Image (cartoon, rainbow, N blue to C red; front, top):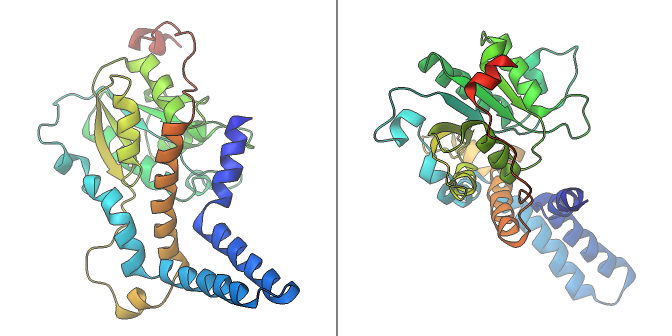
Length: 275
């Protein structure tokens, strides 16, 4: 129940729904009340912020402080990378499931770059295992299983993929991953803008994640003038990611820890192979 409430409230607090609600309230004031000035102010503010948040210089400057810590690939962000990596954890993201589609088409938004980066690192470290996380939501199979299917379609053997199908958020992902790898160092693959929050959640459990960023969004190289100064839904999405991580961080500090349950026995690589 708390998870669904979080999702509904979180969705309404995203920039586009929130600004549309503000604009709609302004229209009501304009058409149905004597508060004309207030209505004009709300409608104008709504349109202005939608415009500004869709501009590349604005959106990327909002996202840059969050993504900046991990905006380079793993090999460049880890000063002394280990010679042997046993586990690569790829956090879940947006997905759907249509068996008639190509496997990769079922990974939405930030998910496909995470999985492809995980596969790249798997090839770099022979003998490692890929751990995918994420629940089912309203689909017949989980985000973790869809991601594992994509990895297998790219040549990763099924026995080298582990799907953790129960976690619904990052905190639960850390809890479930710890059952498998304990305190052993591992590569943590997620979007660059999500890594700071994810690293904090994993290290708060005494785990040793090595940041492996994927899906970098902030553009620092040259782009065409019309891409910078004409509003775009693509760049509005960058503003949304910045806001999403801010809301996610605030929520993490406010909500009760949903992993405070009886600890289950730690799984070992031998028991995983036996399964």
